[in-house]
Length: 407
Image (cartoon, rainbow, N blue to C red; front, side):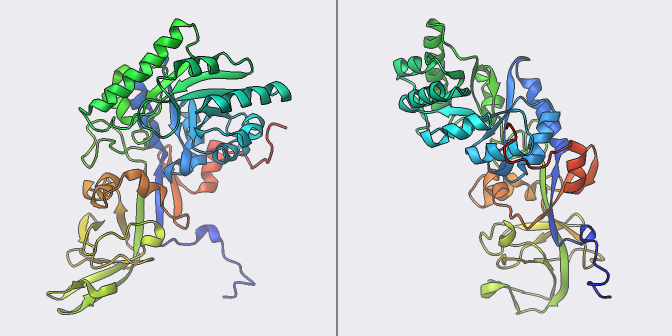
């Protein structure tokens, strides 16, 4: 067949590996978090770093449908992109605002994070000069020592709330050890943040939206739910307390799958993969599967980890390659080329959950999800139907790109 005369329908092309993003699970997780917090308390979904690899457009539009109140991004470029695709929820830029950001924050109606008094004053003067408006949240450094005004700089914080043109809508801090039950630093941070709230209350300057609870803050520290919560890990369905199955009914929204590409026999004494760190002690059946560190699957230690095929555990042999991984499939009956491999999927077995794989690589689930390669095809589960991106765009009514949506 000539492809020039009969061009193929590329929408039907097969994919050697893919990600499935379960937006129904996201809805489940939003409902669960909503059940834990007071009715008036808002929910902010962090969608920075492409929703930690889950897809910021899909997650943002789904979050809007599920009644999420705010979105959070790290940089203005991430917020601008969401605006250009029609997202009209409030978007808080969690990273520190600098002077060069002012025109873009106002143009794209983004909410700024203010981390120092000098920037706040400059922003206020900019707004007075241009006649523009902008909402902002004051970032309080209660002990994380990353961004923010120190919690004991009360007069500076008060001065920011009294600016005439910058609309101080909120105030927030971030908890560094909330995922470590019993760590005294968490209570210290919460206490410092509450002392700022109390001070501003005494001056009738308390911002309307005070927030400090990340995922473990929501689950373990109900006293700090306040006016809004920012549960990232829990909303995406992973246990913020480490490599154990969640004790609450959250569901992971990402799974990674691959396919069997070859099946072959390896005789006793032969090695497998780079470095020959695995040598067969007896004849085994080996499958090469289409997943590697080029897809974001962590290389880690050799002869470590496993995948599941037809619900059978298949140990990884030797080193993970850039585009392929070899696994022992001696126990898998009737294996065929093209069969599906569960690479990361906590619903199949917790051994290949995001939490366990993160633990094995001495990292956190977010590092794995945010490093997933863009070459991996994406499928989305929405209202119990698995669909392509083009179909999801229609379902969620995702708008076409518009460079300056508010002009």
